Length: 87
Image (cartoon, rainbow, N blue to C red):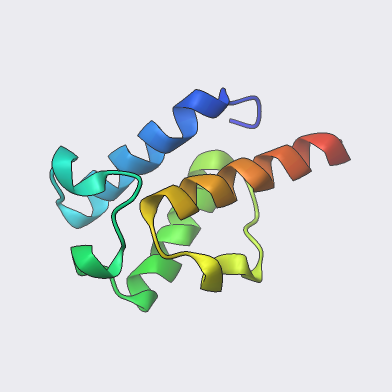
Protein backbone atom coordinates (compact mmCIF):
# COMPACT_ATOMS: atom_id res chain seq x y z
CA UNK A 1 0.00 0.00 0.00
CA UNK A 2 2.91 2.37 -0.39
CA UNK A 3 1.20 4.36 -3.13
CA UNK A 4 -1.80 4.92 -0.91
CA UNK A 5 -3.73 8.11 -1.44
CA UNK A 6 -3.24 10.41 1.55
CA UNK A 7 -7.03 10.84 1.87
CA UNK A 8 -7.43 7.12 2.49
CA UNK A 9 -5.02 6.79 5.41
CA UNK A 10 -7.23 8.22 8.17
CA UNK A 11 -10.34 6.26 7.11
CA UNK A 12 -8.33 3.03 6.99
CA UNK A 13 -6.80 3.69 10.42
CA UNK A 14 -10.28 4.44 11.77
CA UNK A 15 -11.65 1.23 10.27
CA UNK A 16 -8.81 -0.81 11.77
CA UNK A 17 -9.41 0.76 15.19
CA UNK A 18 -13.15 -0.01 15.00
CA UNK A 19 -12.42 -3.62 14.11
CA UNK A 20 -9.65 -4.22 16.67
CA UNK A 21 -11.23 -2.48 19.66
CA UNK A 22 -14.96 -2.86 18.85
CA UNK A 23 -15.48 0.90 18.64
CA UNK A 24 -18.30 2.77 16.95
CA UNK A 25 -17.79 5.13 14.03
CA UNK A 26 -18.52 8.10 16.32
CA UNK A 27 -15.75 7.02 18.69
CA UNK A 28 -12.99 7.09 16.09
CA UNK A 29 -12.94 10.77 15.17
CA UNK A 30 -9.44 12.05 14.38
CA UNK A 31 -9.38 14.31 17.44
CA UNK A 32 -10.34 11.64 19.96
CA UNK A 33 -7.64 10.71 22.44
CA UNK A 34 -6.77 7.05 22.62
CA UNK A 35 -6.90 7.10 26.42
CA UNK A 36 -10.52 8.31 26.27
CA UNK A 37 -11.32 5.20 24.25
CA UNK A 38 -9.76 2.92 26.84
CA UNK A 39 -6.82 2.07 24.58
CA UNK A 40 -3.76 1.68 26.79
CA UNK A 41 -0.12 1.98 25.77
CA UNK A 42 0.35 -1.78 25.30
CA UNK A 43 -2.68 -1.93 23.02
CA UNK A 44 -1.28 1.01 21.02
CA UNK A 45 2.01 -0.83 20.52
CA UNK A 46 0.16 -3.94 19.36
CA UNK A 47 -1.93 -1.80 17.02
CA UNK A 48 1.25 -0.28 15.58
CA UNK A 49 2.31 -3.76 14.50
CA UNK A 50 -1.04 -4.11 12.71
CA UNK A 51 -0.40 -0.80 10.97
CA UNK A 52 3.07 -1.88 9.90
CA UNK A 53 1.58 -4.96 8.28
CA UNK A 54 -1.37 -3.15 6.72
CA UNK A 55 0.65 -0.32 5.21
CA UNK A 56 3.88 -2.29 4.62
CA UNK A 57 5.94 0.16 6.66
CA UNK A 58 8.26 0.15 9.65
CA UNK A 59 7.22 2.63 12.31
CA UNK A 60 9.95 4.32 14.29
CA UNK A 61 10.19 5.01 17.98
CA UNK A 62 8.00 8.11 17.54
CA UNK A 63 5.16 6.13 19.08
CA UNK A 64 5.49 8.12 22.29
CA UNK A 65 4.07 11.16 20.49
CA UNK A 66 0.80 9.41 19.68
CA UNK A 67 -2.16 10.69 21.66
CA UNK A 68 -5.03 10.87 19.16
CA UNK A 69 -6.32 8.92 16.20
CA UNK A 70 -5.17 11.78 14.00
CA UNK A 71 -1.65 11.37 15.40
CA UNK A 72 -1.67 7.75 14.26
CA UNK A 73 -2.75 8.71 10.74
CA UNK A 74 -0.12 11.47 10.62
CA UNK A 75 2.62 9.04 11.68
CA UNK A 76 1.57 6.54 9.01
CA UNK A 77 1.44 9.32 6.39
CA UNK A 78 4.89 10.64 7.37
CA UNK A 79 6.38 7.15 7.34
CA UNK A 80 4.86 6.42 3.92
CA UNK A 81 6.19 9.76 2.62
CA UNK A 82 9.67 8.99 3.98
CA UNK A 83 9.60 5.48 2.50
CA UNK A 84 8.52 6.77 -0.90
CA UNK A 85 11.25 9.41 -1.07
CA UNK A 86 13.93 6.89 -0.09
CA UNK A 87 13.08 4.58 -3.01
